[in-house]
Image 1 (spheres, rainbow, N blue to C red):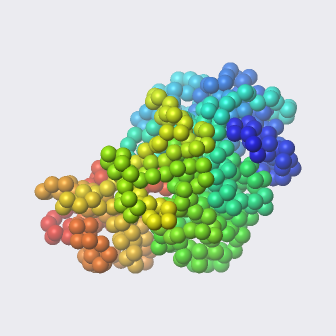
Image 2: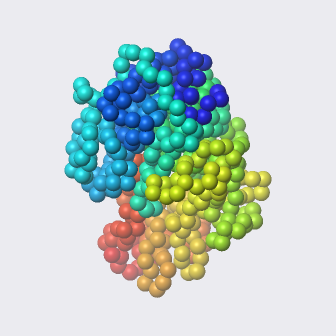
Image 3: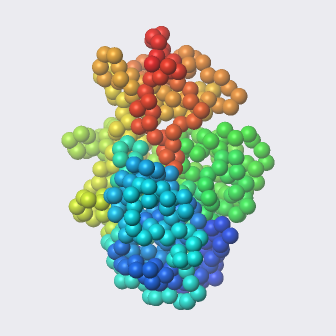
Length: 501
């Protein structure tokens, strides 16, 4: 494939793969040729309702065929799709709508009412209504003359460390996501890709581009279910599944059974999976994990492959990209030294063109990631922490990820999140929120003794609180801001013996 816009990707895939099945969403199945016709006729339906190239169309839709049609129809027309987190409510929804300023909204009935309550006053199309745009039976128009740099979508960051920001994602970024990830996963036309991640997130959206790159089939599920995941993968014949790091321990926590191996899946893109879980996951489910670094703002810059991976390592720099590790003055640091990861692209417009309201950066400029990493000898990168999540205690910087790894290695712990809370003296104290494994009981004092064998004394948690579940975003990231804001409570155990709360 040679084109670097979404319409070119759709057209070339239709020519190359024609009658092969491209997409299955709910009860809808489409070939590549049918998907090209659907994108074109959806563009015509949008244009008939007043949508023009450059217009922004927000979506508050779950994983359903209308969202796929909107994404591809907008790209064909040259409009900009703005998929929004369906969990947004009230002020948080108002904030992203005010930032995105969409001209149109396509939503489910309940979400349309929420948007109206949040102050949206533009035209609304409700999924399922007779007047909502949908693909027709005609051939549809030729694609708009979009350029690789033109914005195809505005995707909002998850907001785990601050307010969500709107990222301008150009046409070429989606194409390169597809090519890079298809290469890393070693995808072929015989593969069936199964994702149940939300399609307002770049991970799920880009499974479409991966499939079109090689002629694979893409199956979009409604939502992640730990108890049903392998049954769903088996039902659709998946050979590749898509997970996030937090989902891997959830699957491992399920009771073993015949469903563990009763599927065709052999690979999973599962970024941010703790290294200690790689081999247990492969042994139990027969699935090799593939890690990597990418973000809404960038691309698959660093990654592993099914045949070459190191547990707990993000991978090495992929072709077409650059990466370096720097100190606070943005000066490079030696291998083995923690610092901030900077990345750049040598492929035009494989990265975003910046945030809404900000100037467009130079296409080949270095981008700050906010991630603290270590480059090891040989070029392998290891994630340490989000810079904003580093805990400062007794003059030492503590990686919350390192603390979490030590806590999770306790046999009674299923999942954990470490975060700073205020100290009576200065700097921070270390607190962990812990989800206990089903059928187990956790003694906080035993947990801290266990951590003392794994961590330096200054990093051992002072505070421990068991919780039924960690607060997660729709894409499986821990909302540490919620934990920090709640802080120490009357239910918190304090290693110092003082009364917590």
